[in-house]
Image 1 (spheres, rainbow, N blue to C red):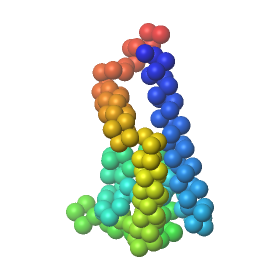
Image 2 (cartoon, rainbow, N blue to C red; image 1 turned 30 degrees about the vertical axis):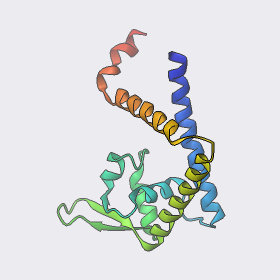
Image 3 (cartoon, rainbow, N blue to C red; image 1 turned 120 degrees about the vertical axis):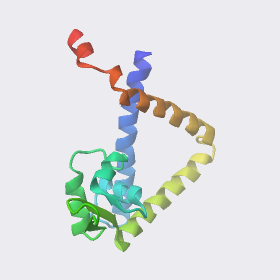
Length: 156
């Protein structure tokens, strides 16, 4: 069990990095130099929504610690529009600009092509659904704080 558990952790990390490389290659193919792969995925996840910067991390649209930096760069480069929240003047909302929507749609088309290629005898929808189910259970396991504690680390 431990070997399978450690393998899935490694695979998830590797898959995330490979996905970022695929997005990076798509940006390079399009000649886009003022946006990185992480920022492109943020735009894709924002889609047509208007979100606070905090919601980007709460919803899992950004996993790093420097979301403010990435938002600032996307605003500076014209991919995001940032406005003060009308309800809480301390927070800001962001949405994709026209330029950002083009990127969002382009990444969406890339993922559409990938899904189509995968469905051509690579992986079935059922197989992917089972993988998603297992990964969601692992996420739920990790999000339950009772499963990890300093006691178990200190006991080792």
